[in-house]
Structures are given as C-alpha cells and as structure tokens.
Length: 296
Ligand code: SF4
Image 1 (cartoon, rainbow, N blue to C red):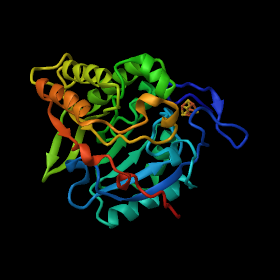
Image 2 (cartoon, helix red, strand yellow; image 1 turned 180 degrees about the vertical axis):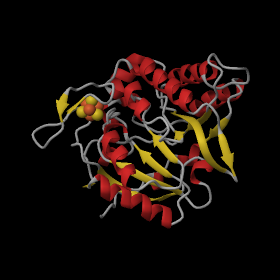
Image 3 (cartoon, rainbow, N blue to C red; image 1 turned 180 degrees about the horizontal axis):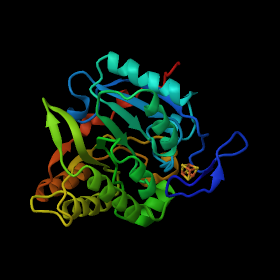
C-alpha cells in the first residue's frame, strides 16, 4: 500500500526496501503493552490504563523522551490478530481502557485488529496531534477518548524541533475533528469514558510558545466562557520535560524546566481559567520513562 495516511503524505510503500518519514513498516511494531499508572487521573484510574506503545513516529521531535522507540524503533513486529490478543490480555488483567500511544501510522492495523476482538473498554487515541482528517474520520465510532498533544503555537519552532512547518493549523484542525466526534466529557466512577483531553508539554526557553498554545486552547476548546465552536476539552499541562534524544544539539532545550518558567505558564493556565490537570514540576524524572520490554 502506498502510504498517505498522515499529514506527511509520504506517498511511499512501507516495506523492508524503504519506509516513509515514520520509519516503520505497515505491521504494528510494539515496544510495550502493560498497565500504566502515570497518565491523567481519570485515564489511569485505580487499576491502570491498558497502554500499548507503538514504535516509529510521524513527528519525531528531536527531544523525544521515548527516543528509543520513536527514532531507534525498538520493539517487536506483530500481526493485527496478535495485537487484538493484547487487548484481551490487558482487559483480563484489569485495565480501565485500551490506550494506543503514537498510533497515527498504524491506523490500518488497529482497525483490522478490532475486527478480531472488540474490548469492552474505552479506546484511547493518544497522538501527537499531527493527524489527518481523513484518517480521523475512519476512527469515528471507534475511538472513545482522544488524547492529542497540542505542542506548538509557533510553526517556526515546530519546524526546528519536530520537522513540520504546518503543525499549528494541522493539529488544530485535527483537534476540531476529535471534538466533533467526542464533544462531551463523560467520567464515571472517576474513570473517563469518552471525550477529549488536550496535552501540552512545556519546553525550556519556550514559555512564549506555551502561552500561545494555552491562549489558543482557551479560545477554541476550553476556558470559562463558551468556546468558538461550542465544544469543550480538558487540558493537561505537563512539566515532565527532560533533555533526551538529540536535545544536546539544541542548547536552549538541553536542560530541565526552571521553576520560574513553569510557574509563568501555570499562572497563564490559571488566568485563562482552564479546566483539567497540571503536573508537579518534580514529574521530570527518568523513572517516568517506561521500560521497552515487550516480548510477544
Ligand atoms: S504514516 Fe508514515 S509513511 Fe505514511 S504518510 Fe505518515 S509518515 Fe509517511
């Protein structure tokens, strides 16, 4: 199959002879499938999210904490049927949902896997936000919770750190589509059943970018007043940045966030009256990077 399923539109075969920008073949490559307790409270719940980390990435941020899987492609290739068996296993072990992490380049395999087994749990699409509308439309009625990043308000910065100069408008349109599909937040017994949570990771030296992101979120999708399109998402502000991947080549991000930087962004979050979650600054620790230990 010639792949154009994400906004990169590589128009290339994904075979052993060569891949597109995401760097992996069409069959899902898995780096971890396990209960995960470090997500937002209504995602992890008390029993854990059933989180499946996919290898490869269509954004490939230079600072990625999961560099071993996004760039180095650590993991095991499995079939869509084997992927469906992971849903069964996670469900049996008590998972509160099935969470697909960095799934944008595996949409075909994920949709096929769900024809073999449909878990009786909410399904979560945890992506970089760099998703195409056509692909998202194929997920309508399938995905219950969207958990996209909204990383940048500045396309020049997106180009420098994530190789894409159209991130802002592309991710914003993707989030509009996610909210069209899931316009209401539903939480039962402290566990999210459907809706949208928008994540933003604050980067060192780039508080202006973060403030622009929060202002866009407030205007479009959250805030105390009715938003432009009448929809509403929760917002998750993340402080867990630590230099990883190729961050050493980018001096301004080759350190952790300072307290001053994070509080500046957090104050804006409060001022805009955003509704959701904000991490503690001490969330920046290697212990939060999962082990890539998938062994089928
Ligand atoms: S999914 Fe991969 S190969 Fe396909 S368009 Fe996106 S980056 Fe290119």
